[in-house]
Length: 503
Ligand SMILES: [Zn+2]
Image (cartoon, rainbow, N blue to C red; front, side, top):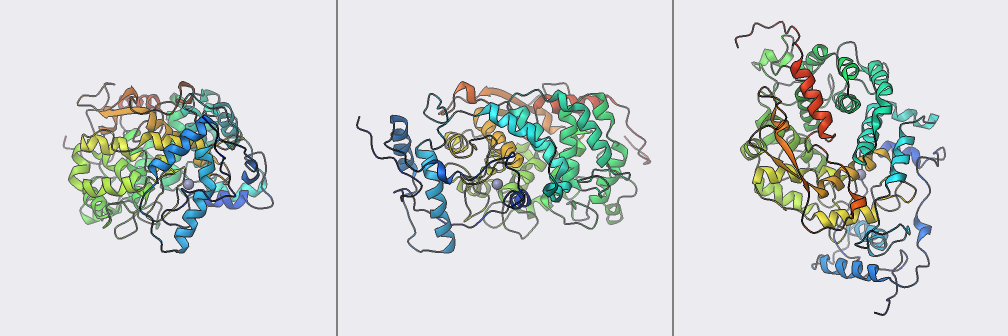
């Protein structure tokens, strides 16, 4: 077969014409700001990739196959109205398509002609992310628990033994645990639910008695009680915003640490007649479903992929997803909205209507599908192979770490969530009738009924060397970390709740 000319980033691709969007604003925005500053350090990721695919010659057979595939999945209807967002989308496609069609980074290819997972480089990148940071990174001090969580989870997903970090994790989080309960983002900072979530997940990944015992569960109970609102939702911090992240983070901590479901006596919500952490919560999450079917941070806000995962995760902790999702959400509208987030021909997900594809939504939206499929009892609602193509072809940074999209720098956040999304494409999870680990039978035990059914048997574009480990679909950490933690705290004598019990 005659080779055809390869497209470059400079020449318009025939595929580059589809809908809108503008720039992103992920939780890593501040990291990006720092990395783009003059003081950035080259070691954590390196320079622009724009100059990597100038003179590309002719297409290989693999590239021709990829080009044929991409032309097949291109959205056929093109709106000719030019807007700021349609221009941004077209510019983005110009950047991304060479990576989907060819191999500008010159990475080794798997048997499907797709770049292999650069495991060693990604491991090295995350090891570095757990090291020391230069002064310019002081801005990220309040994200300390996140940097640890993203890095440890990314390493775990790639099969790396993180036990060497156990002592450091215990030490770090013993210093950011607040005297009144919960965890701050950095030393001496006030407790915050996002920091608390990331800290607890990091600690349970480190595992072991010393790690578990480093958590003051009774004070955590009181901290969470302060966050519970009369509406049913949770604030992220005292006097802070009330949004769906708070609900997911709070229930994650309550479930994993086996903390009593009843509110502490001092919880302000008790004055409004609430007695448990889940009172009014289901209806409050219902109110977060927006008119277009997606999930928003709080009632009335715009739907967003990360909030969708938080909402579904929270409901899946409250009970079996088949019950809780169907009871509180319009599932047809939700499935429609989630499906519309998968970009074509890019294959990856965007986070909102009219926005650009971004590797972190490989998890925030891709990770919704195992939960939705369990609730709908319908498998294969999404295109796993298309997402795999995006992650392996366009979201791997040549020197290590994973990214939002070509041209962006690698960071621990995008590395963690691209890998979680890749895991979701490769493994099949089901919600079982019976618990497999002899756990629970008590409060908030729904997350312990999930089972891994091995590698997905459908269309496959990843090779054996590209497989990442299973990730618990609700907590986004290894299954073993989840089960060991819950078992430890179920076996523990409960603390004195200071409440007269009737059961
Ligand atoms: Zn992102």
